[in-house]
Image (cartoon, rainbow, N blue to C red; front, side, top):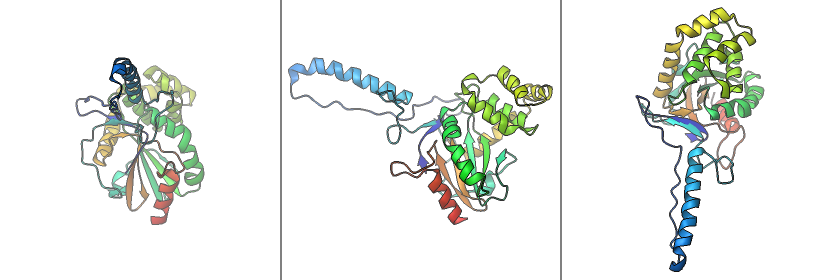
Length: 274
């Protein structure tokens, strides 16, 4: 399983969220003991700054930590045993969820994401366009979006329901895009405003959203993801549409990086196996 760039989840009853990774730094003993006090103070300042940076997902230089430094995932602890790579039946993950691409495409990507997850937004803006151009628009891959709202994101559940309500009027992907492109402004009032902007019947949309019509649908997606071993967002199951898929965790880049597979290689391997 590739574990790069994702958002993780707390245990039931909205468990406590642990930082993605802690980097514990052990001080090296100085040979000059008379300088230990001053050096110790400097070390403590640097150590605390580094630790805070690791919690926030940034380096001391202000840049995102990547690769081994930080697993870019927002994560909850898994409630089900995680499957082995390649052991997930693709057919068991298919529901009536939103789909992008040719229904008969030989490879399927099932995405489990959270509209309030910053790494999910990164995948949406940086990687999905290339996957769409090279694989979805060419009929090789279909993408199925399933909701995995993390409990520590207060707008994630309602945003997912807003997208489902838009889908009822055949505007799922328009609302999906609006939510990610306005991630810092998620709110029920804005969902209703954006519904009008993308051409929905706002009265019908508002009634759908206010009634909680799709609450159980979103909860079912979350349960399906947990059963498949998903514990953070974004996570993907990628494989031949009629076979078994691989669980891939994180907002990976399209191309390979640092000796790790990117989406292009993973998709090509799935196409070869289809």
